Image 1 (cartoon, rainbow, N blue to C red):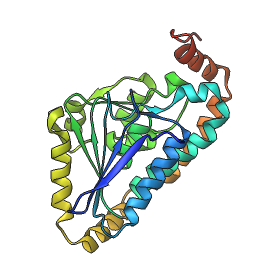
Image 2: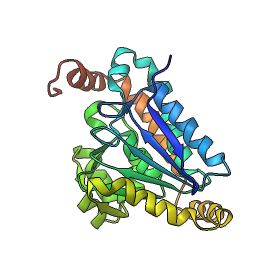
Image 3: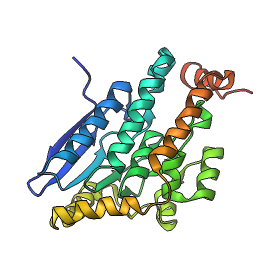
Length: 253
C-alpha cells in the first residue's frame, strides 16, 4: 500500500483544500510529487471546484524533495524532476486560482508551489529559500524569480540564505502575513471571496493573466532541470549530498 503524503477536501462553496502531510518536514518522495501533480490537476478539472488552497501540516510548508530517497537511489532524480515539473505546472496552468498558505520553512519544491501560485499567504514564522547549491542540485529559481525579481533571486540562490515573511511582504513576493493560528482561516476567507464570483469569469481571468506574463515559466524551469541532471553527475554534487545526508557535516571543496 502506497504512503499517503497529502489529502484534499472540497468545501460546499467550491473551495478545494489540499493539505500536504508527510511528517516531519513534508519532503515528498518521487511518488508523492507525481501524485500531488495529478491531484492538483484533477481538482482544477472539476466543475464544482472554483479555487484551490494548498497548505500543510507539520513543521513547515514543504522541504522539497526527499533527499534521503535520492541518496539511496540517485536514478530516481528523473522521476522526481518529472513530478516537480508536473506539480508546478498543475498549479500555474490550473484553470482556477491557486492560493498557497505557507508556514515555517518553504524550501525547494515549496518555492516551486509558491512561485507557481496565484496568491501566497504566509504565517509570520514562514521563511523562504532555495539551498539548491548547498544540496548539489539546481532548479526552482524560475519560480523564486517570479516572486522576488532577478537581483534578490540571485542573491538568495548563490548564498543559500533564507528570507522571512515580513521582508517577503515588503518586497511584494507575497500577499499577506498573518499569525500562524490565523493562516488557514485567512486563506479560506480569501478563497471564499473568489469562489463567490462567476466561475466562468474567474477561469477566463486566470488564463488571461497567465498570458500576459513575461516569458514561459514552464520552459524556464525545464531549462533549469537540465542543469540539475548535469549537477548530479559532478563530484561536488556527490560531496554535498554525502556531507548533508550521510555524514552530517559541512561539505568540503
